[in-house]
Length: 253
Image (cartoon, rainbow, N blue to C red):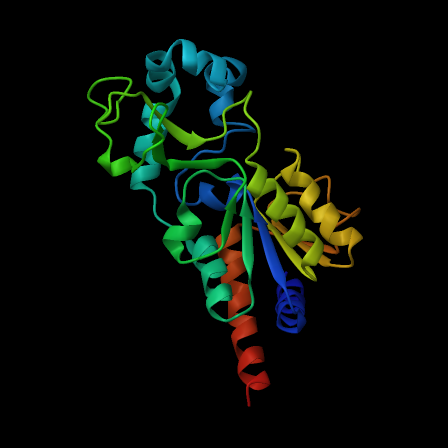
């Protein structure tokens, strides 16, 4: 793996415009369970019932009790890990321009990344269904469910439920960034959820180098990604930064 990490550092140093696509795997190390896969949230909660906007609109109290309440608490307590901090460091070094994330935890912003396209919205804040006001989780009282805005409207996560469309701006900008970049880092995603999983394909079709950082192979591996570095996001990002920083120092002399 050392050779692959060194190769990634060299490729990142040489790239002109780097974009990252991240998924649940990067946040698992912060204690946030994935939605899909073994042990994921959808293993214990029916996604097409409790994850669907129709159910929420019909019975917000039930959806808050079964799905959102515990997830809100987990996200409030979570902190960025070395994977998030590594991507923030890449931005600070001028090596990463944009993150496209499928995650709803806000940890990329907490780590310091400034241009984060949230494909599925954000559960670190709540939105009033009546007035549209947005509140940080810490400002939302869940002693009574569903919690309500000061205007009396029901609060909901500012995320995309099943049955809702991906935000038009997020979809548009993601496609633009994928087509523009000359390198895409794919970190902690199974690359099966569309349309986010199509972004590395757009990047590859436009000539970009695609690097996967994942514990396991994905549908991209051997087809659209140039190579896969197998491992946990935090450890791999630490290794890449350790190899990249001397390279960038040499280039600045």
